[in-house]
Image (cartoon, rainbow, N blue to C red):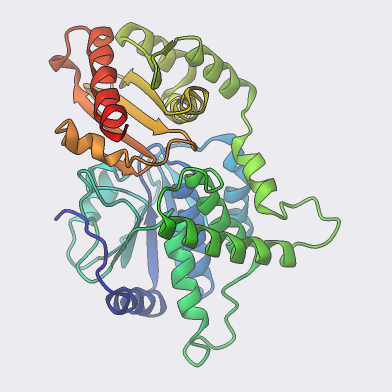
Amino acid sequence: MTKQDINTVAEKNRIIDRITTAVTKRDSFLLLGHKDPDTDCIASLVAFALLLCKFRKDVTVYLAAPVMAQFSYLLAICKYNGISVVYGELKKYEPFSTIVVLDTPKPDMIAMNGKIAESFKDAEILKIEIDHHLAGDAVYAGDPGYCLVSEASSTCELIGYMLLKMSKQPERYKNIDFFTRNLALAILTGIIGDSQMGKYLKTRKERFYYRTFSEIFDRLLVEKTAKNSKNLSSMEAVFDVIKNFSVQERKCFESIMSLKNEEKAIHYVCMDEKKSVEFFGNYGEELLVNISKAVADTLAEDCGKLGLVVYYDDPRISGFIQFRLRRSAAFIKNDLRDVLVGLKIENGGGHPGAIGFRVKKDEVEDIAEYTSNLVSRIEKLLIEESA
């Protein structure tokens, strides 16, 4: 079923109540995000894991592969709190009573291995979902009544909303401090990461909730970080860490940027199949995928309107060509999800400020020509119609 926003506050509160009841009554939890996780995905996994720890639950965070270096502080939080983080194949797999899917648009994007996939089919295992992806081909992965799927700047914002609701029920949650420093840090990381400190938000509602939640959790982080501590103590400091590249990441970024093309309203990079194979060989899948998102952001800001990155998937993984489109902070009058509708693209989704979609490589004879035509169509759709 296609994801839809929750119609009323009352219904959202009922869903939150069901999820929090499951949190208190169930014993073992497996937390899953999407393949090639971004800032909000990793932060939401850590934030929800920390919430479960407050109820002394058995919790495991699963990642298909190690994450980029700048997120090491989030994984350090897991280690400090005794949260199990496993990669690839689980050496020892015991069925969990509950699976929580976070920040993942649709089921086939969930990072999982064979054992987890088998468990996902088990009707006895409760599936909870928290996500902010709506349009495009977004499809529910959670069980009916347990999907906190709603319009928000980030999935971490939805977790923050849930924590605020729980904190207002002291008679139900006695002696539980929902706003410890590490939990505030994880939520703040996701909130500012997905929106790039709020600059990619479009609507008044999005900006209002971003401002509300970022201010709450920034204040908590400042208050609960000891003076003269070297730990992260503000959202500006967190954002600086998120933006930092390692030497290898910087090299990958600069190599991709060297392929830059410029049109009036779109700056873009198009890696053909040979170049994509070369990049995957030099940098690996996860690094290339994550850096391509940073390149799209940079291209958009350089252009002042839109940035696009195109590359072929690693042929060992899939036969698709990936397209990542991002708008600049100054070009917020358009919702990029309209591109998916206008161009009749079914295999894609994202946010108002960033979308991704893919096409089968067998359907494209000349990727340079295909991309050039696509750029022209997007310019016509977004620029001319909004002029």
